[in-house]
Length: 558
Image (tube, rainbow, N blue to C red):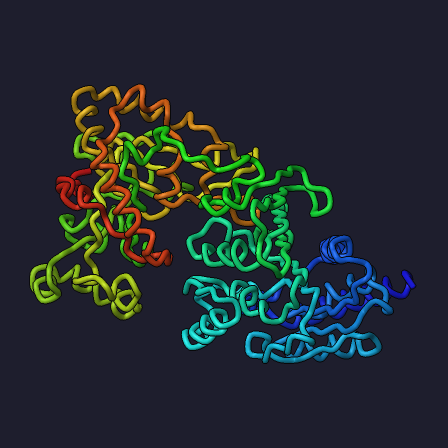
């Protein structure tokens, strides 16, 4: 029997490779088609067998079956005489028809249909084992009409209102609630991003309130489970019953599902209060602390989103070659990969002393005045309009479209993305900026609070001491607040960097007043509701807006 199962799995893998090669990578990304590796599928189904009572007849369903990776593993661990039925949904006819042919002599019924639109079964026909690797389709690939339908179906199925930024896998999770029998076991292979991002709060609410969350295993992000998708994977297990009082969830990390590197039982009350679940099982809980954090000393903002860096950011040579007016340009730092130094010095005009010197187009004159007063600039703007730059989202929402949001130079910056592998060293860098250059949105900008700014004015050497302490912040403290993606890629948003512990700074700097801290909390709450779409303008704090624009440090002053 084992030999027959191996042969069947070999045929399935050959079919999978053939189907995958028939679609280009971009199309598969758009449709979220990433097959589950055989070894991982077998671990998941082996674990499922250990969780289900041996006396239970099994009603199996996979809402996104593909070619049947999970069903192939299911047959290995559940004998035919124990199986009452097996159903798989597949929206793509190319995969669905191949799977139907492959499994035609088995108990599996393939339904070529959209699971999210299928009618849920009656109570007696519901399933007690649901295993799924749902399509990983990001929200911006879901048409608005489909998104409204999915939100309504999810609300009806499980009573949870999904965030509009949710990926398709979140809707699969919620809609499937109506397909599970009481006490059913569910195992989901999904991206771990829901554990940290704002839209994941709806998923976490479902897992904590509507079902009994049993176990979350998070794979090491340096060990990407899917070779063709940059996704950090998580296996989530729960049963379809309300959680008991005092319930604890098994949180594991690294290694394999069956043999993790780290393990801890975490009370659901800690998960309910914890904004970031990826801190478990490394941390025992998420206690409330009054220890100082970076947000006590700095207002932290994303760098400037231009709408088109290629168009709006120019080197000095191109500005001069085109004859563009120097007064509409101001210095801007290059991206981190083109910034080899950790300390940016300035010349007498405030321009950064870097080999790669870039300048940002930022003009607030009306088009008619530009056309009359600066014909060279007008020609360049016409190029931008003909290339569609003026019609991009950010530019459409600015007046005029070539005027940038206000982002003054900040004395300290932190890189926005970083990797945690040992070869690269620290995943995030703190930059000491002496120049008048602003920064693009691949940096986080740290503006001193008023009380800190006054301390810097009174004692300028404090800035260097603070910068040195920033670079001594532990890697684990930074990663503990960062979001993690496949391949060990970490990302810090302003609020997340603001939560990083900063106890050593308290010995050098005064803390913000209680009123200032409360104002920051109100501002951060408002900022949390912003749509985090790449390139969208991010609101600037009241203090940042009130600061004067740097003196003219144009290319002509170099």
